[in-house]
Image: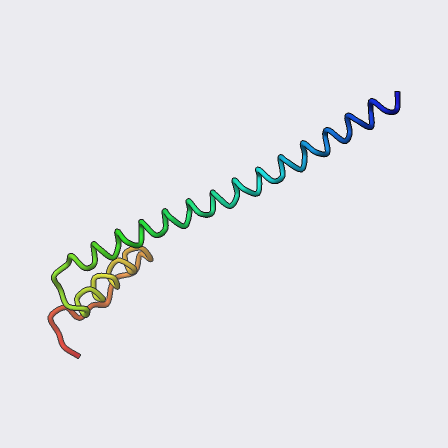
Length: 83
């Protein structure tokens, strides 16, 4: 009776090792996919920024306005004014 239980435990241990290896592989794959998504998003943002025909100062002002809108604060801008 003891030997069949030992064989079953060994089989289960081997299956556990395989399952942990697969889990590790899938975790690594998920991280890689997340990295690829981030790269795509960053590329999309860069393309959008580069397609805008404006000066760096104007882009900075637009980003400041977006940040202020997200923070629900009125933006402090200097449109058309030079410092």
